[in-house]
Image 1 (cartoon, rainbow, N blue to C red):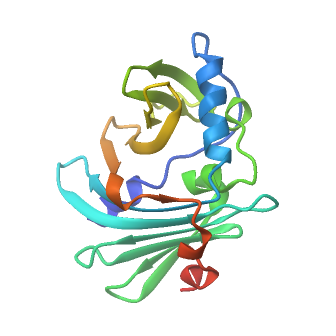
Image 2: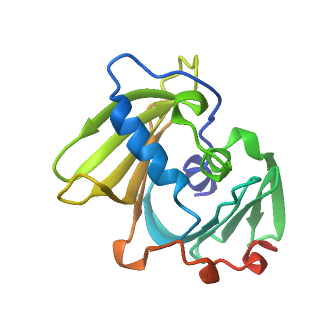
Length: 202
């Protein structure tokens, strides 16, 4: 189970480029939406490659001057807590009271927690798609030939403006896919009182 949990977080985000055919207007729209997020609190359901599901909750707080903070708690049966702060992502195993530390730069947490997100520089935008119900962006690390990707889905209003980040799909080099779906009625955006700094202290 631990491997399946971590796969949802460890997507290498490096730098640069937009693929030919990607819609720059959609990229800009998504970028502006992401940069407008000061805080996010939401519950989610994660579907692993083996079709098992786990529940969890995310708290995220962005800062305009430095890297933000993120906490992710999985349900009791999994017993894991992830906290991103400053330059580290720490994975706490609550079952055996152990922890593992990772450089924040090599996780998707670094991408969303940057003071200013620039999709044209931070990732390769492989493709974009817009329907009457959602916007889809497929992202991958620059120069990566392994086939790994991160696909973001945003729900939209009737006028085409973005309503919310709805879900994402992580595909690893072996083609395994992990789906994380937000529970809409638990989503709270830009309510800073819901993300006090004490949440990010282990």
